[in-house]
Amino acid sequence: MAEIKEAELPGLGKKYVVRLDSGERLGIVIYDEGNRELFFFGADEDEPACSVTLTDQEARQVGSIIGGAFYQPKVLEKLEAAVAELHIEWLKISPNAEVAGKSIGDLAVRKKYGITVVAVIEQTEKGKKRTAAINPGPGYVFTPGQTIIVAGRRDALEKFERMVTGEGG
Image 1 (cartoon, rainbow, N blue to C red):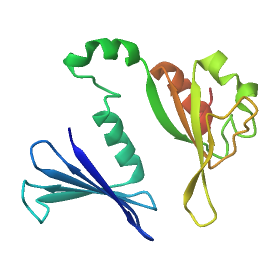
Image 2 (image 1 turned 180 degrees about the vertical axis):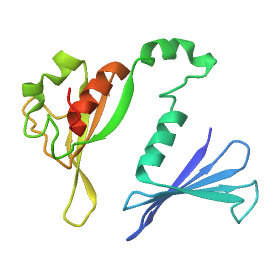
Image 3 (image 1 turned 60 degrees about the vertical axis):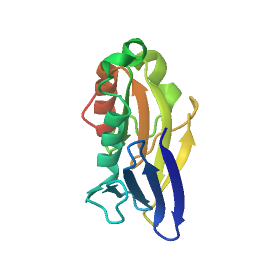
Image 4 (image 1 turned 90 degrees about the vertical axis):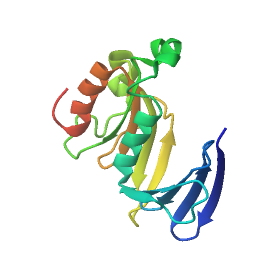
C-alpha cells in the first residue's frame, strides 16, 4: 500500500508525496489558486524525472479518469455495474442560465432530472474559491458565477447542463 506524506506550503497550498509500492514517488502540489503540479521521482532519485502542470479543471478531469468514473478495470466488474451510470460534473452557472435565481426545489432537480447537487462553490472577492454549500437542500437558490457539482446519469446531466449554461433545457 502506498505511503502518503502531506505538508502545508504557507501562502501557496499543500504538497503531497506518494511513495509507491515500486519505490518510485509521485509529488503533487496543489496551489491555492487551483493549479496542480505533478512530479515523478524514480526509486532513490532526488530530482524529478518529469513534471506536468494542470489547471484546476484538467486536474479534476484526470482525477475522475484515475478514480474510474469513465472506465472500470475488468477486475471491478461488480462495482462497475453499480456505478456505470453515475457521472459527476462541475458546471458553472452563466448569467443567462435558466436555473439562476431558482431553488433546487423549484427546479425539482432530483425528481425531474434524477440529479443530486453534491456541492456549490463560489468565488470570493479575492478570487479564491470557497464551498458555499455541501449537499444543499431544496431551498438553496442558484446564482450566476457559482460552480455546482452534480451527480447523475449522463443524459440527465446533459439536459441540466444546458439549463446551467443558458443554452435552454
